[in-house]
Image (cartoon, rainbow, N blue to C red; front, side):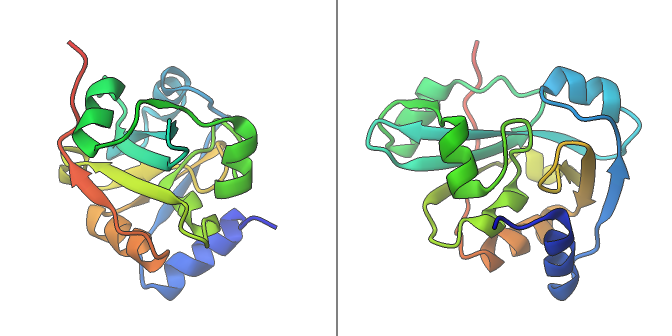
Length: 166
């Protein structure tokens, strides 16, 4: 069984990570999130679950407003052309459905299949907002605590300046 939001909060508490969660209607896109979550302070994010042509899996976590050039990012990371991971693969590896992708879902990647890429510009925002394994809530944590959480899941995040589409 994949972790639930309650499992996540227990993990954050055990790590000593301060967090605050806000309820809102379910959101599936950045546009819906902007409308439903505008009242929530801090940096809002988007999370992309990607697969490259060598079947390596990636989670790219970025500012919601960033228009990422995925072809340039693949070249930057030495990956073989990105495509979006399927809903089935997302559920199998990260334990969340589409619309709920979040770095918190790394809790479910116990075998370390996913490579994590963080937007360096995003880490300047405080707090950072992510879905807590469900898309009808948003949980805020500090950038330093995000890094601590990701490392505690056994993932070594790469922090990079993400290339933007022109």
